[in-house]
Image (cartoon, rainbow, N blue to C red; front, side, top):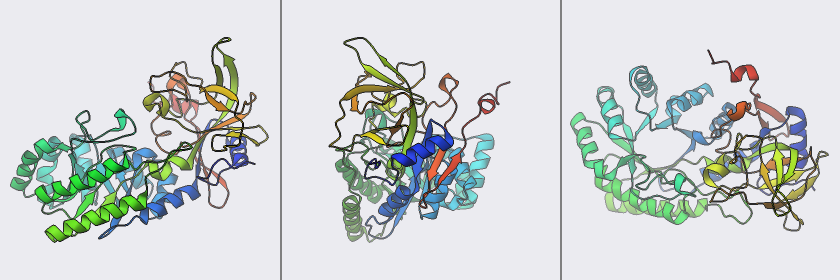
Length: 434
């Protein structure tokens, strides 16, 4: 049996074939899973229309952006370079919104103005950003969006909460009168309002954010025609975890937007901006076991893989857990954490080859290595790390210890393996050094 889980079409023999063809370590993505996730999101109930924007920070590889754009999603960029990457993938400026901590000046301000003339939606996130862009926007009669800071948030960890007082994303409600006073004096219009409370947000708090945001729009934004509830939709990576119920959240938002219309006679379009939900379970990191160690009779078993935190830093950043699949050199599935009948009696910690104690895929919230049960591999067998399609390739310290950026491979809906990012060469690693 080679099936890894119920999330996607990739099985152990696809893992083996990809490893043989492109070498390890590598990232492997399943196109069918991406297609299914985009369809699920696009079918989310809405009152007066829905736009789904993919959060590019989750994974910005060109081939994946092309797939997602062809499926009808638009895009949320977190930097001007992400906007440039979207355009390089054939996406129009009019399909991209920029929500950033950057406050560009000089050449970058000139570039931002050019992007906005070409249709880029600018989501104002600070008073300084608003002041810097105000005259240009007034002169060119361009409508803006505003991200406001709600003062409450939720995330799968403290570092993924983007809405409470410990984070600084958006214009805080205490600054709203100042921001809107400036906008009124300049004749600026906010036709969209946005809030993002965190990644992996509790669905109950996500629902309460809907209520809060609609109340802010009713009080402060008479010209708003679109409400964005942000992303952070909870996804399940591990056995036993439950993802956010997209239909249920959609029906709740639909009901609240219809109630808003009953009170105000204003019909609001709805937007969401998932990233993790689209790609997390579409991706694997494929590694090879290169060594086995043990720290004494009362110590731990360690499996040393040829890829670790340089491919997936989420465990060291967040104590995040990813499912492990042990696969023989011949392609047979030795163990999967989704196989309840599998007797995984070998407990081990999976580490990479970085000279760093945090280079582990098995860290708990205290930063300590916590062994996981799995089938015991031989040196040369493969370990696939699941749930790695989002916030792995884009977020990891890939060149730490001068390790090379791993290639990315797409398993197409037609059953082909296509390289969509080549392995970095050593010359590329040092090319900018002078």
